[in-house]
Image: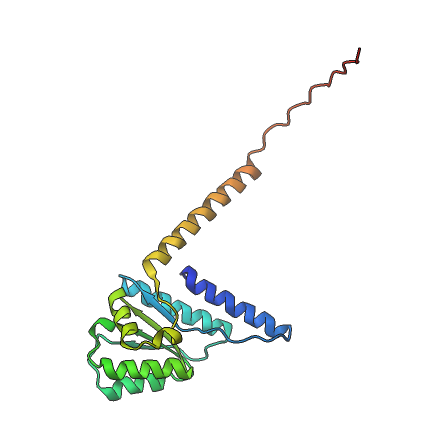
Length: 192
């Protein structure tokens, strides 16, 4: 599976940071938190996991991400344990629509995003993410603007179509060689 455009851009930022470090230039770590909205929970979750795999491959993450499904009932202690387990790693949160422990979750989420102890990837519907952002006005500064998975998939599909069309054109240019037409001799007309 390939990453959608907003996540690929984040990986490009990491590559740029790595190259700057190799050149001994200042290279601040980009914010790696992500907020993904959409209709298909499985697709959003798969993108989050692929993002984690890419970060592990780049050497940014060392641990397997912790997945927190808010669809499941959990106590305050369980919520706190999820955040503790994800320290120095990644926490993928999904199922925000059914989060009964909202106050505990939101306070831990804001604290985790502020402290920079782990990378947060939040997956949910537009409405649930909007409610989360509305719950704390400062969360906008800590987490990136959400990107809609549906829009990102459309952009990916269009980019794939363009690549296929370009590849077909190049293939046609390479394989279909038109015979070279002989040049007609030029006639020289003397000036009177």
